[in-house]
Amino acid sequence: MINYEALLKISYGLYIVSSGEGDKGNGFVSNAVFQVTSEPAQFAVCCNKENFSHEVITKNGKFSVSILNKDTANQTIAKYGYKSGKTENKFEGSTLKTGETGVPIVMDDAIAYLECTLVNQFEVGTHTIFIGELVTAEVLAKDIDPLTYGYYREVKKGMAPKNAPTYIDKSKLEKKAEPAVVSKKYKCSVCGFIYDEKEEGKAFSDQPDSYTCPVCGAEKEDFTEL
Ligand code: FE
Image (cartoon, rainbow, N blue to C red; front, side, top):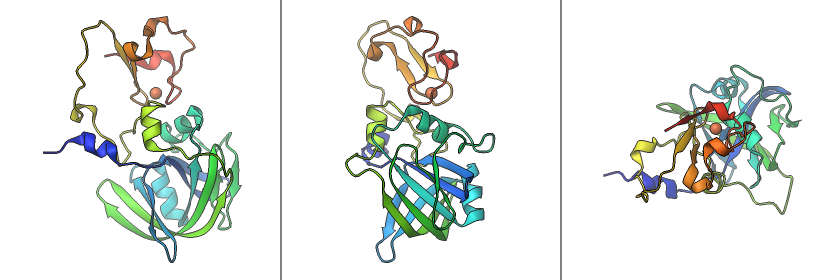
């Protein structure tokens, strides 16, 4: 038996992984970044083969990892996590730094960053694990905590998009017993965020027209009733 709730007990961080050259390239939000060896320091990054970033990392042979702060703006997550670099330039409007290798590093909401050159890669079905050797590591804000995936899920009510390695279909999670109170739920069609009237303490229809999804910034009209 597989209880998918157990998978939610694994803790992760949240990062923006970028690649390209100078201010050209792409970045995406990833929770699958981890150190695999100490000497030399090597890092693994898992990327969906259909992501534009997959192509950009493969082509440029390097990547950067921006470590996000705990209170990262929803717009940053929305831009790098829910938009595609195939259709828009995500770097537009972002503060970038060019690393020693020429790789772009997203500075928005970052408290530290890593820069790696690609040394290996492994195919894992829908995803590729890229292995990079550390070239540069820099701390930008010493006293600010990093954003964790658990905090993002529990406090910011975010969830992994379909192309994330840790995506879990909602139907696989146990339904929580709910008291018989009439309250409706609305789902963001962009990121899957659920607006639960009971949890929010406010009817969705009472939200102003300017209401936007707290996770991805989608408009009120992008929500559908469940
Ligand atoms: Fe959303």
